[in-house]
Length: 308
Picture 1 (spheres, one colour):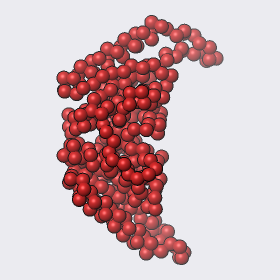
Picture 2 (cartoon, rainbow, N blue to C red):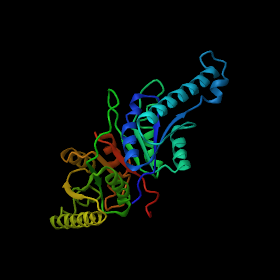
Picture 3 (tube, helix red, strand yellow):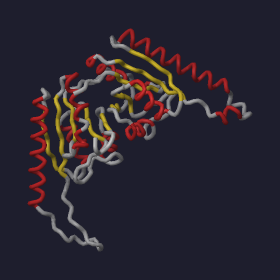
Picture 4 (cartoon, rainbow, N blue to C red):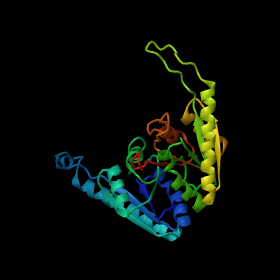
């Protein structure tokens, strides 16, 4: 298990985006990690600055750069004075999502913490754009925090981390990151498996040709229970406290969100897709719905390849 050593936090000038900072600071302090705070400035297109239009002035571009630098310098100075962790800051330039990805690779960051969207004078409405794109491109854990109205709150407690699994090695790749969270915070893991309805096979005219098989459903349940039991035992050998929940639900996302509320979990950690029988944990379906529906932070990981 590899603990976090460099945590990157993208900001956009809004108080909404800053709500990711307390959790990132808390994790950096517990893990002894470097905290990188970055802001990406997107320059005005060359063609726009070259237009002879009074509203578009190259001076605006320079002033916007200066505001970005002043804002980030203020954040870094405050964190250095208050956070008691090593902090670095950088104003980057280019397309936001790809530039953040390049910074992650260039600095060997092993965790990105950000809100699902920001809102303010320098913001770019990240929901559905930057955060969404990073979920699809980063190969390091991405911790997403849903911002709320009001002042920036202290870091939430991390007592229980829920990890949805689907019996695939691909889906299990997120376990390393979940174990790192458990190690630095003392949290326990809750392994979750959603048993969805077994659908009948349909013929071309949509007439059921194979009835629901109770024996098959029981077999799937037993296989899932054995799998979860083995995973709990494996984690226990590594000193990680874990328990498992097998639930039945008509949909994986709704079942997971309901379980998270019932179990009062503080974090959900999941792979962006799995290779299980029904390929349930697919980004754009389950993981995407969980990110958008969860009231607690969600950590997503897109393993580099199905063979990884």
